[in-house]
Length: 116
Length: 110
Image (cartoon, rainbow over the protein chains, first blue to last red):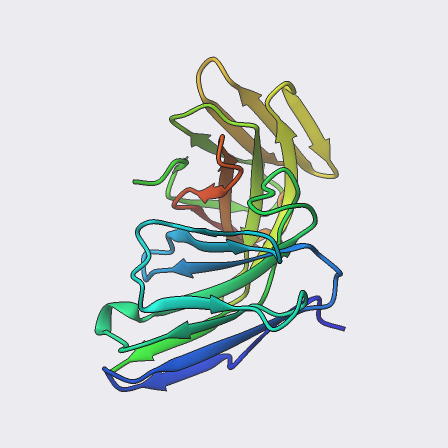
């Protein structure tokens, strides 16, 4: 079974739309993350979250918001999509508390978002 | 700017040769991690080295860490075509967040 899964794998949408990307992990991890990888392959942390604390990268626009219905899920909502939001978005999880970079992270397969 | 910077950005070698990738960073770290990303896939954790460690091995992988120079290297010995991928270093700073470098794209020719 896939440890960290994301849906959809591809998402093509128009500017101005609102969209969501879903993420689920079956590893029993405490913390989940969202990353953005741009066309030059740079990976940037967007959010780090568990049921106690959310850490937001200050460079992330407030059009982006994580929502966690339970410990195994962290969905990414994006409002008023812009051209610059086109990228691959990766979900990840790890054991330990928020920002627990002390432990390895397990990544999902990514969602390629294209904004037209 | 990226906390970690990999060098070289791209590396092409023949199967059987060794591949060395370097990573430099700017601030104090708790640990440094290396990840591999195959084309179109998510990242896979390879190895973690703590700030009080100098060298670590895992199979054909050897990682060194020099905190005085703020640098790390990843050596892949006896490379295989299946090692073709992008390799990223990631540092963990005081905020306990992973910050990735730009990656090294390794191509191993059969």
